[in-house]
Length: 309
Length: 309
Image 1 (cartoon, chains in turn brown, orange):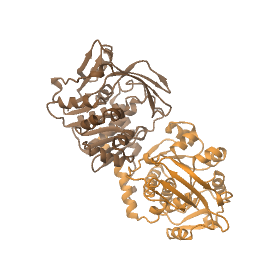
Image 2 (cartoon, each protein chain N blue to C red):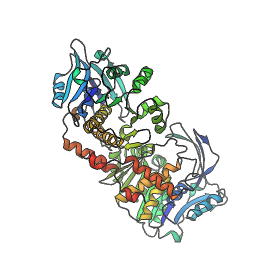
Image 3 (tube, rainbow over the protein chains, first blue to last red):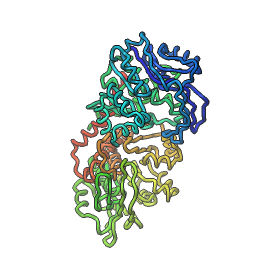
């Protein structure tokens, strides 16, 4: 099945306890489409970049089966740029620079060839832009997955809620779930957020794994206890892309299939954090992914028959 | 197999966002022995109380198959007392009052009838006292499980390390693992701590579950996403008691068995936090426990065959 990924393609400059980078390729659509590309082909991207964007990276995306016909290039403008510094615990960070540039007035264009997409992954962007993409699709996709962040809860809550009401799966982190619902308990927060529209909610907890909620069920996916988290940038986008790509590849949107999609998304995210930027996820082998998924399986496996005695 | 539980029996006065209590029964040995009593009988307790301790609670413990011959009663002294207040997130708390009382010069006595114990659970106490109990056993138990806390890392690190070197399983929380090892990464912290002696390490992560490490393996047990955590007091002791009791009942100390023990300990702890103090774990049915364990099984279960494709 075809997957449409919408989101930023950008430059990041990162500082972690392990080192720092000059401007490297980043952006939600970059991470999400690369991650999804290990499961499904082709992936159609809607985004916008400036004339300064790295053509070599576009070629790498093409090699991974990512179609960039929907990526607008504004030759005389600059790409979105974010610079940030992570603290020792890697769970907190500070933003040093945000330059919206081409994102400031991004008007997403959906090429005709993208119109038949059955799976839509809305990466983190202004909720108004995310909604515009939904409106510009002639047919509602079979499944719409949306990622967002606290920034939009702070400055555009009403618009955010309007977009959330249109999607099937919302993916946010634990602090965002608490902020959006006003409830500290994630179980209660999940109920309130699903009452806003989404039938499914994913709450990402970083090194503590992820929870998948439906109205009646809950699934917990662990995170691997990694020795090093080198750079957490893009982990959430990589997770969401892997989740969406896995579902699109199976074309099965049952809760059981979503569980497996969460595990596969978590596996891709666990690679992402091992190196700076997209370096680790640009060239994975299927064997590596299979082995990593097996590690997740082993991590939580215990003999359930005996456990029930 | 017989289980020996060592630890405090105490009074607590608690304040949570849901209410407050006058002095109620608490203490590591109280929680741990009650929890273990759902798996194995009899349980032998070594502890010390003052003349003010609640005889009715001792009777309740007897009813649950807990033997208190090793509980010294110092008629003219007062029992250990702790008072604390939990904040809204239930993960942080402040100590309001600590009165050591009978614990100040606790010299543990191991009755002759306890000497054959094969499983030893050292609840949180001064590490010197924990070590004394090990020394006063004529035969080394088959398995020694130890719980401790950051307090002893702050004021008695050398003694703590001496005791840790003598045990098989150490159970601490994530912040304590980081403090004890000096490493933020729990995977690295685990290696350093196991190099101090224990062959197995449990890292409790509260609402984020627990990790069980051996030299070569790791297991992750989730926590249930509870709607309400009413009172977290004693959850760690209840976990450790359930873990120890389950192992003693099966007399199987393989890693596979320890995984199941972690799940059973987690299940008991999930009951503990639903009410103040020991109220919820004083009278559970085996059916309730079985159903709760099944919730843990369901929470992480996914179809591993398909996941590996």
